[in-house]
Length: 114
Length: 115
Image 1 (spheres, rainbow over the protein chains, first blue to last red):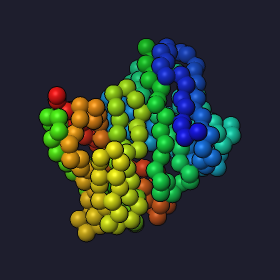
Image 2 (cartoon, each protein chain N blue to C red; image 1 turned 90 degrees about the vertical axis):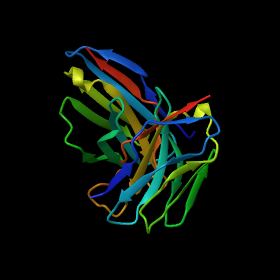
Image 3 (spheres, each protein chain N blue to C red; image 1 turned 120 degrees about the vertical axis):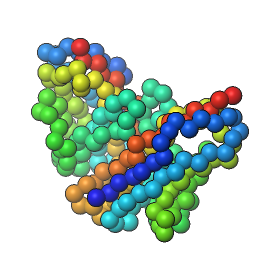
Image 4 (tube, rainbow over the protein chains, first blue to last red; image 1 turned 30 degrees about the horizontal axis):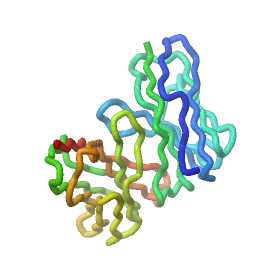
């Protein structure tokens, strides 16, 4: 299995809702990442987990809350989002933090906040 | 800090034309370099990589050579197809950058190939 699987593929939520994005990989990778991508822009790093511990938080607002329950799973909990948070959310994984072999990305969750 | 600069797009070519997308980088250490491709509505796919100077990465007819002397990693393809239409991102990973252990992306270059 050489994939990163993200669910759901599309999500529409209101500003008072609570939802979660899920990411799963079975490649034995020990580093996992959340990125946010706006239209016609490169991905922006949000969070990095290494060996299930939060390694980097790129000053992301607290309405985004990451969780790494085990080495294969990464969640992103969403609460009280704003319309400007609408974007493509990408999960990625790599063998370790050196990322010498690059990242494997999921196909993303397209989030619309209404 | 580390940075990646790509040529502005969109790049519009006819089918079977030669493609070059320029990429230059700035890094404090010895980075690995990557090209990723993003097709409409999808995530990023690793296209090719090079981990040290003078390495050539290649995949699906695309090539790029890690040039330390010019700090460049230009993407080339001899004959593009309509199916190559996508956004291409150059990126680097610098494992010696203790405070920034993640990929640094360029701004992306949109390629449009016309039949």
